[in-house]
Image (tube, rainbow, N blue to C red; front, side):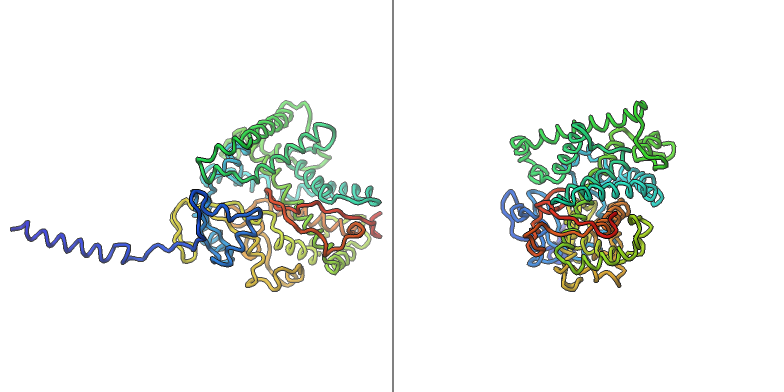
Length: 500
């Protein structure tokens, strides 16, 4: 008799469970809107040659948070300030890891650098080393002599070419490479065949680091990389990079040749890393591969730094009114000085506004380096499962008409009475990211940009080659680790009254 009573009781319990807890009666998971995907490739075909632009266009149809499937990988695209804030502030810890990248693994010693390393104890340790020992305010200030000397060298180089058309990209990249190289390893590599070889090697590294790897999104198509020779290129470049870095480290260790630092110049990053390598000071022994990966990460910063300078000079040449206003400020505050120094920059408010406006329109990495969720999380109103990638479209946020008046216009004045900065606290302007995975080198990069720009407009009047008007300048972008102009900026420089 008990069994007959048990059956309806179990049936009633099952009914209650189904009614109250089944997916149809509980709150359903809400996924972001998605464009229609194709078999196998998903939405890969919709990325285009300039993904930040293609994804911005898609977001105007599907919303500021949309879900794409790049091959087999779910990837969120966040294109609004609210979504960026939610990812990089509200749920920063959840979104603090990186997805696996074959390129980063191949070039950066298994992603042992601070930019691509996945979240965990190892990343926390190297982030601490980078922030406290290499890029502290005191350390950044200690390289002032390097920045000012290499900026002065750049000015001399331009002065020698005043009678001809100048490839400004080449000049700016040389200056930036020299500053970062001296801060990084204590010397530059410009002269002779060895210098050219090193420069070419580093440029190839940056190209590969920005190359799309189909195998990361459709694993069974990894063979395509072998057929195309991509895997071989990565292995060869990684091998040459390792040999170069090993030679630099061994040279320092055995003392055959001391770092070529000027008197009173700060200790370079390599010297600092070798001092703390045993872990006695940090509690974290630094393996050789980790040391090399950290050094290599700074090389990647050269591309984004000079790219911003080239875009800034391009915009100034397209907008003579802005150029004139900047020249007036810098030349008035310079007051006939031989050169602008870092002490002068604090009062150059329009200069800082120009830099911010350039970063708003031309974020060097328009789709910030991908993050990956470490657990299930809410993004605005959407339910996002763990292991979902997210790309934040800083380029789209910088052009959002809800945030900016006349967003497509170059108007530095918008920042003159604004507290918005680029340091990761204002999510309307995030060219360097924010939160735990924000770029730790922001102060160094901004100082290089502002000092170079101030001296350029202080020392020279710039114009385009004969027959070219500002409005005719080709603004086509070219993808890479940083998005640069497709064609180098060619200019003619005339000495200003303060050029002597």
